[in-house]
Length: 132
Image (cartoon, rainbow, N blue to C red; front, side, top):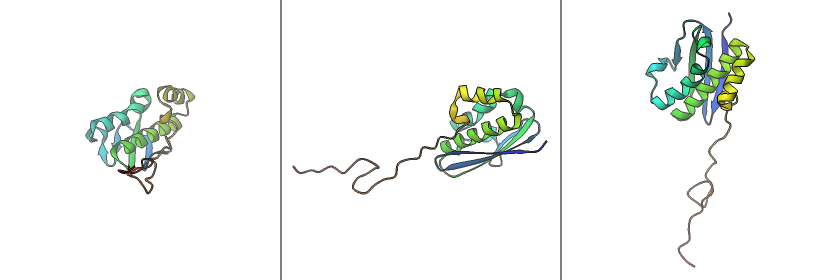
């Protein structure tokens, strides 16, 4: 069967997933998923795999993720994995399982941090005055 390639995004992170027939191996940035740190990010990546375990047993998943922080990378990877598994199975039930669990498994969360503007320490806050 032909490999499936899917993409997931979150903030500044971009994840590309390649799904091929195999034995259920998951590799993230040339490391096994079991060795991926921190644990919270690993658990986030595991979510779509735990929702459809019978589908994951017959495929190898290779994830390449770049940009952003570790949590943004984890969320981009989980979106890409879920999209790839749905495309691999071509089963609408798989999409419904993901959609009912968390819609961001199918659709990327497009929100970014608002940029800082001049006149204050952050995006909206302004420097306080000490007179008046």
